[in-house]
Image (cartoon, rainbow, N blue to C red; front, side, top):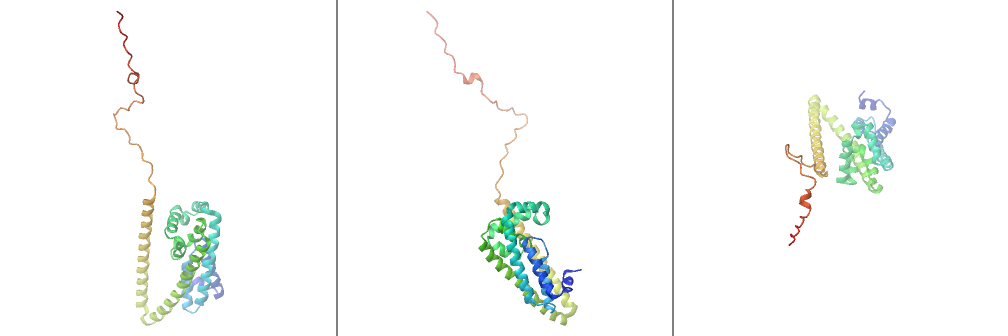
Amino acid sequence: MHIDAWIESVPPGWVYALIALIIGLESLGIPLPGEIALVSAALLSSRGVVSPWWIAICAILGAIIGDSIGYSIGRRGGKPLFEKLGRRFPRHFGPEHLASAERSFQKWGMWAVFFGRFIALLRIFAGPLAGALRMPYWKFLIANVLGGVVWAGGTTLLVYHVGKVVEQWLKGFSWVGLVLAALGGAFSAWLLKRRAAKARAEDEAQGLLDAPPGPAEPAAAAPGTAAAPAATSAAATTPATAVAPAAD
């Protein structure tokens, strides 16, 4: 069953709780489809199944609380926690993912928590990694609250209004409008994916340039070349003996 059909089959009260739980667990560091669940619930709100305001409020609370719990876990566990998770779940917490997230924190500081709301990789890393890197909690909280409000609340209201407009538009243009909307969405997704891949490649290249050079290896001797002697000959180092004068 698709996630939007599954959410639609749940009573409205449970939908609000599920949205808060899914987004909270994803923000805590568990890889779950929080963004898909939020968009699906927002589309249902545009059809009158649930309230968009309650979806936004529950999503914001789940994002803020989940990130704060993730921060506490990361502060207690530190980097060894990520190394352990990387060995058990290399697909989501592998060394390359952790290195990319750390570069983002070094580049943006506390705003990596804010922008991390809009990037799938950073969304599950932001809270725990901020705690592991000992970011001051007041800085983390400011970025966490702002990111939660803008991402969760903004996404809900945007999808709600787009859903309303698209629904009215499709009534007039039927399948032609549906095909054009699908093509436009596919092109936008492709463009965003391409830009994200380009940005990731630039970050990796920058990381390679910033890495310290390794020790230089000694050049191998050419074949057939005799090795230099370890010590000089005794005749070269011993002073010459003076010749005694002949007796008269």
